[in-house]
Image 1 (cartoon, rainbow, N blue to C red):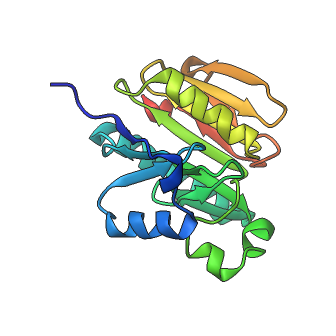
Image 2: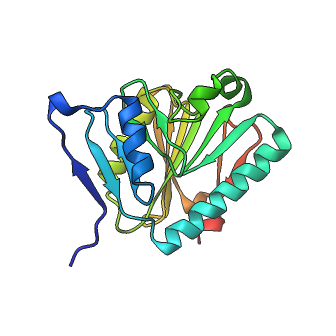
Image 3: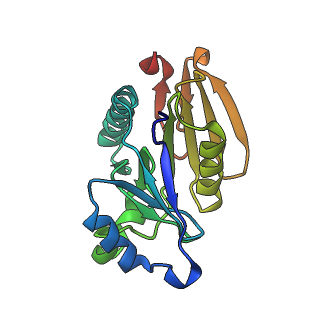
Length: 195
């Protein structure tokens, strides 16, 4: 039996949910990992495997530790969903939003899937995740306003760096570290944490 990676519920155009209905659906099914793609399809994902959850937690800890010192913004876990300009709602494994941008959101937005693109997102790929699907997701993040994205390929031992200018760089874990560049100034991730 093949493990469930994700299941896509395709809805007819006349049944497309607005943001309020989608939020209500997610709250009624809060035990599920749910996203929505740009076409309005509902994506139900299996839980993260144990090892990926361990590495995701390490990444979030290191990102929050840097943010705690820099005080530049807010970090978010994979439990936080964001509504993007294309209508999709995604929940990256880790994300960061500059303080001024997040603080400018009305409180009502903060208590739903806020209409904002994080400044930085990271996704972790395990052996069971499809690299092409995650690459498409990363490209969509950038097209929707994310300034810097990392696809950390645990299976391939490399990081795909996506930038706002459309460039994509592949960095092997053997390079030692990746930089947060101007989006996360002073932040460096030692890739040995994933070994």
